Length: 169
Image (cartoon, rainbow, N blue to C red; front, side):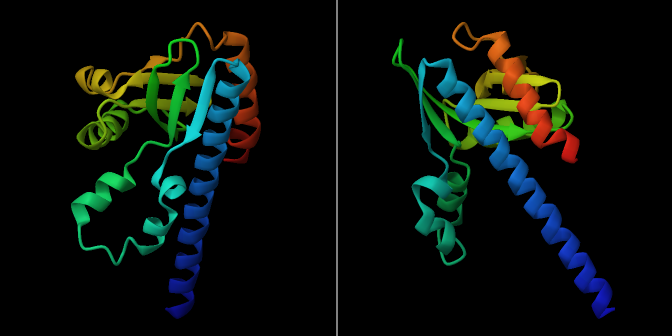
């Protein structure tokens, strides 16, 4: 039984590590695609970047609700250098588009971070939307369409995403 438990624990640890690596690759794809577009300032914003000390001490914290809001901090703050708009953006990778899962993500973000946006990378394309719109549309999210992020640029980064993630899955 101990061997079974150990094998199960190792399998779970490996799965967790794989998910973490996929998430980081997706964040890098997003960050570099926007930087290459040349019209954006991309700032790491997630709590693991902004408040690393809290991340390591989260189990000691007494205010669960506050910690949950902090844990849900979007991954990036993106400044459009032309309009000077600032958007808080959560970046996720999903192998399959599941409306119920997207709605759940959007609802959690909407509870804590208004306004915020969701960038979703999939093997077939990139999707982007304001969280409040995704909630209103019950989990529907539109393909990324932005005048400063060309289709050609998106296709190059989608190919890169697929080389690193999809073929390894």
